[in-house]
Image 1 (cartoon, helix red, strand yellow):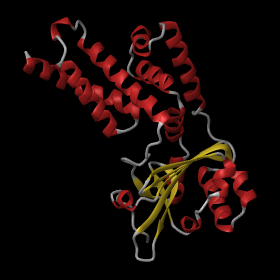
Image 2 (cartoon, helix red, strand yellow):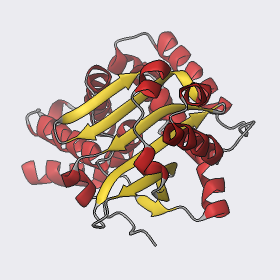
Image 3 (tube, one colour):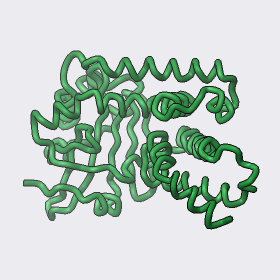
Length: 277
């Protein structure tokens, strides 16, 4: 029986990984969630499980929900598996401003319950009754959560107005380089969040005034233009050719809403950064 159960689980692993990855946005976290689901299954009486697909989806959903909620209470580095690529002017900037990126950003902005309701129902056709059991809510309340999330996602389909993401980032970098505090405030969202991955851990700064006051991106302004996971960013280099920092920006409605930076040499060395030309 254990071998049969293991085979049944392996036949469903790919779909479970797809569910967890859409929920968590991280291959590593998705692998962990699916492995935890297997450990829980191995402790169950398989004969008592009527619908293995539903049972496993529910378990992966609950594990992922716990992970999403824990992220809200403790900062984590956003760079576990981000691809950094050379920014090839128009083609890549257009891609960075595309609906695909907008969708990624809006999914990250959804609350844990909204994200789970939207992803599991709209992308994986999990019934609202089952979602309600995962979330501890009624099917009606869960349907409202999914509907609210769907409206936010649909809003991301509208083409952005005003300056491009890259233009906003360049304005921020110029202001930071020139020490133009007022210029920084003009391009920062009032509730902007800055996270910096340092050797001592992740530092979080909230609010435009604090971010502008502490902006130290002069070196980055002279660095290499890159795309960080599809987002506009820069890599700064030391004179010896080693990386100093990677900075990525999220832009919405013509303002920077999030800045994520890596200044930890060990993390930078593992990112496979493109060398400056």
